[in-house]
Image: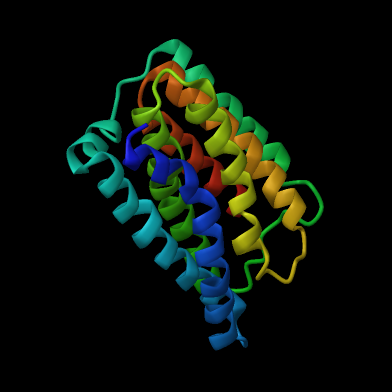
Length: 203
């Protein structure tokens, strides 16, 4: 197996090991406002793992092609609407609501839905879709499991304490987004689902 593929396979636990202390360092700095530390942790995650790592793994041109807007057909519209309905129901689970104490917090939360929707889909769907197109385990199952486990890191700095619920929800989203990317042969629609689903969860 090519060395780049091996690195991509072993990257998820490394990502978690690297990002956990970074998130906790930022929330330690902003201990009066943990949400600011959480946000800066996400920015590091987006830059290093959501942008730089995918560009190294599959190249800028490939990424640009994968995120190119597509025109939907009826089947795609139905596939996109389903998880958005699930997001609407999921937000009513106790402990999963987002506390919005100010307009600034709401704007931070909304910006994270866009950042996560874009960069996480390139990282957790785009790379594996491109490098392992015919391997169901490495294209769908492996990144989806680690996508769920990764959510322990940002969840661990939240005082709400519902990390397990966050990881379970992320696991479902990960599997569905991987399935959607496989059916449509693009991550454009998984970006749309991830972003809009996040907005539904936040507002």
